[in-house]
Length: 51
Image (cartoon, rainbow, N blue to C red; front, top):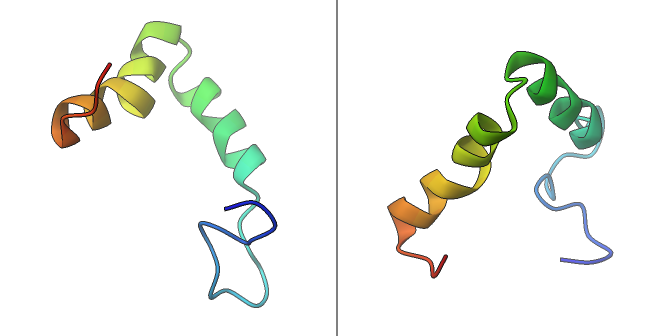
């Protein structure tokens, strides 16, 4: 994953700025616990990852 354009490997131009998008999440969902559910806990439950 390092030294790649993941998660946008096929986009040549106008790649989204992932840092800005993540900053927007903090505005859209200001509660840490809810962001944790969105970004972590849902995937843990869906894919059966070890928590």
